Length: 361
Image (cartoon, rainbow, N blue to C red; front, side):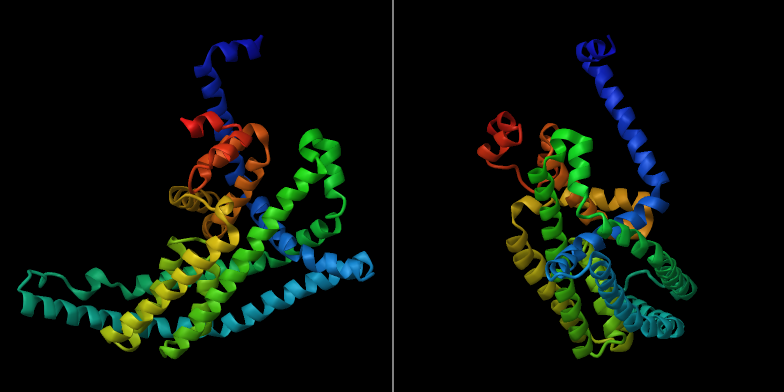
């Protein structure tokens, strides 16, 4: 009787669906302490699955293969932490000097504008626009959040170990528990597409970080390793991430050199690297199906950042792409994946997704 009532009243059905959506959204935010490390562990597990599979095919016992796979991840992340830790400690000691230098540059700029252009900016003082204490506090907060993230690393690796240990039995579990969705071919397709996206995105991000770090070194900027690491991490967030990653390099160029040609060269290097990798190489490797519209990227950044904080913002696009892959392989929800896509599919593909009439219209 309830089902018949909702079918006859589409408004009531819409309100019911919206109420369910609110419950899901609140649950995602409330369960962040559990879901965030689980998501990180899932990403690492998906990336590491080929390594474990390779070791298993070589006749290595399951426990040994899992242990070596985890050790590879620990070694990679440990190297990144060691490379960045010295830069972080030195950065904290240099921040007051950088902030004071920015104030001097601001004072000089205001004086130039007042004397050359005659604009009424004399009422502004340096502390009105650049606050050294605020800059130091902000940077210290960022470092504190990174330290908090590192403190959960043990939990992430622990979850990852159990995910890898059950990787071979997950398809059978899904098939037994979810019926049609547990079909082995469909589940394998979802996992393969997730793995393909994460591997390509990680390789592109790694190449971006290496080139940005090398360019920062050539431009004689402080902390080239840290700048490369920031570019590597923020490359997971398209468009917005590259802009945020370039900001510290621009500020460092102003503080250290104060030269417009030097600044333009730094900006040109960032633009060239992100254009080649982000706009040319990455779309060709991933294909259209793994793309997201720009609006969806911005909204996902806001949503996951609100739900899970800075780490959620960093993982926003990978999480949204994984959700999109799952939706594409679920017949009654494929239309949602079409809305998330960068462009509407061709008529044949849309009919397969159950939206053929919409595409033709």
